[in-house]
Image (tube, rainbow, N blue to C red; front, side, top):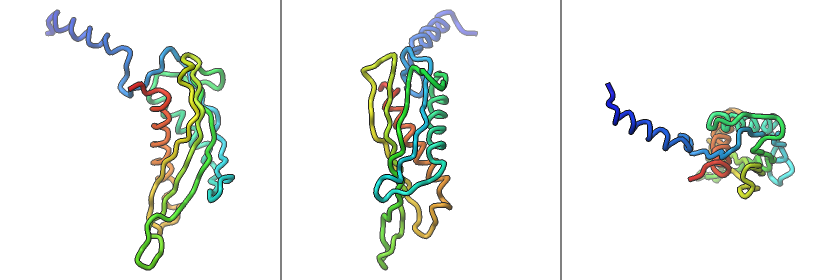
Amino acid sequence: MISRSSALCLLLLLLGCGAYNFTGGDVGSATTFQVNYFQNYAAQSPGSTFDPGLDRDFTLALQDLILNQTSLDLVNSDGDLLYEGEIVEYRVSPMTATAEQRAAQNRLTIAVNVRFFNKTKEDVDFETRFSFFYDYDANSQLSSVRDEAHQAIFERITQDIFNASLADW
């Protein structure tokens, strides 16, 4: 049985933590968010290639992360928080060489330009480029590591976007 003083301390502790959540996201007075479709313009960047479906997959990954780490509701229009942008780079480049001057490792890099607007706190709006990479054995085809690479890159980029827009550390 819990004593009254212990129960009171526990209650005060819980109430004192009400403005925070375990992810560190600070949504302020926002209740909804919107993620517009991220168009894939990577092929327009020199040295970049095009991956069909990348735009859809990235948009869904960002939506899922925000849904999972906040109590915000996803809406199709007029969200309190708005994320929009485009995929601007999708590049495979050699990273390390063997003694025979062949690539031993390749790097897939994805970059996304993001615009964030907060209707409830306008001084936090931004436009920023986020990028990350995935290294894989040069003897492997990208198609054989594509899903794993995209998952790792999306996880990092979407978390960086979340941190830049909602983490209040």
